Image (cartoon, rainbow over all chains, first blue to last red):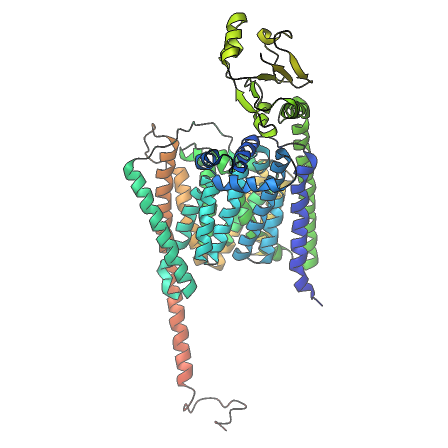
Length: 465
Length: 138
């Protein structure tokens, strides 16, 4: 039979999973639709990729123009799940959150031991909503890239050169921002080892040579590009709330406090590089840069989870000598945290579910779009205004063409004969108004000329002659 | 880490979690950090060299603004700041690794000398103690 010490790791991981999985599953259980961000754009691109045999050029353009082609391909694979695209998105982002927790746990196992890995898994489970914003913002690609980033770091600690490079490339192809932190982390984490190269094992020496070669190739490519001249993308500076104060005022502050001890206890330059880079990137406006701090938030949270998971077992062992008291403390701490997180997540989901808040596609709007998908003739071209983001789901939930009209479009600004001429020349066959956010245009509000085909409290679909 | 430091850290963290007043929690956290740092320093000063290699340039990045032209867009700013920071960290990391190397080397030499000495005293040393079961000696 197993001894008590042999069972401890199993208990710890079962406990951590009992915390992570229900809190992750709370998202698909308590919501009926993705909450925001680019869920519709991901799904539309996935539909285009699935049409590869019929339209290979469109599929190629979708991939080549995407900033995260691998994430798009992975999401497209979810077409195997027999549900509709909105539900698929919810399932995929939930799975990505769990996968990131698993990758983090694996990395922590390399950095510490099983208590560290279990602690990291449990702490990550508490970050699904309000702390991390992937589920709320629908940033699937960055969440998937986090999985590959953590696997890159884990494999480099194991000195596996092939998989480190594979995961590094996968990190870049799923989201360039994750590669932006992965590359300097690898440089700072591995290069000092050249100083005691002779005392390393043959495997580590080989790893060091290959990684250095790969990083040199990357540096040469960077230099060539620099000599040709960079075309920096234009980015607007946006005032961001201070992430440190924001996190200190949240229930995540406990882990922030523990992370300071973790920083002092950590012995891996690789993990220390990641933590320091994550902190600097997430607070870059303090350095006079002001670049999309919100996007770097996830790396800081990951770093805090790593550091606090490193600190936790040692703190607990030193503070509580008796294993019973230690276990009791852990159960009370994580139990109270899990209860708080479940309650907070529920109120966030309730906010999004409330149609009055216009925070997602409401069921009535979805019904209208699905009606258009089922009933309008093949080849229909639907026009909408930009008043509501509901319309983004038209090309996903139907096979019709969709155009969003800007406020100056002649269809929305002209009257009578001029309007008749515009309609005759335009390719649109139908116009849809989402009346929870806008009113039907006065010029088009003529049932004789523009018959209403469908109407519900959220949408009106009209036929154009 | 000492039990006192561990306790202080847990208490301070719990104070943040509860939440008590932020200022009180932060001052507790400061005390805990100091206690942790001191206990770390007293146990092994050299073990904190890697931490210092990261902490010093990071603190410097916040405290000393770089003379970057104000009309530069964010990405070049990021490249310059992080390039300089990485360079400084790399130099300090190399120094920290080098600093730890002589100690390791000295340890190895000491161990080697001890083994050689032990080996030298084995066969014909008259002062070699008689060990039970040492048939050759008996």
